[in-house]
Image (cartoon, rainbow, N blue to C red; front, side):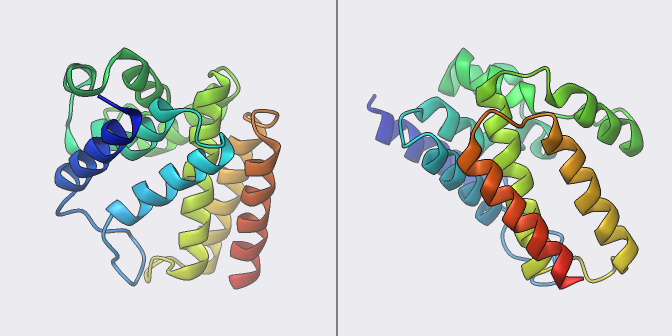
Length: 178
């Protein structure tokens, strides 16, 4: 199957797996918008030369949010995609504070490709924080999220300077919007 067909199959799969999921923001936009934005960012960051990374971007929350197994991803999209998704997947059995701490601790230990995926994910989240923040989040919680995202990204710097600049802009704009 061609790379384009595989990417579109992943987009279709992600849309189906996340069909009932919405973003946390006041606009309650469909979750697929986040996945498509992350995929677009990694595609731009790699010049469109890494189809597996784009596919992993589309599927990066499937294990955490949809209960999809690594075996299911491997069967449909291969071991490389699965490894990338697994590298950015939190263990939902852990308390939230521990998951957040581990993201910071593990960020620097992942591959450059997983770092690009993490950067794109955090960039998309900060863009959403500016455009449509969760309605019930006070300013302090928004500031804490932005600071945490910066701490995660500190561990992935050096993977892609262009995407790091896009992240920095998103963080500055999210800060300014509070």
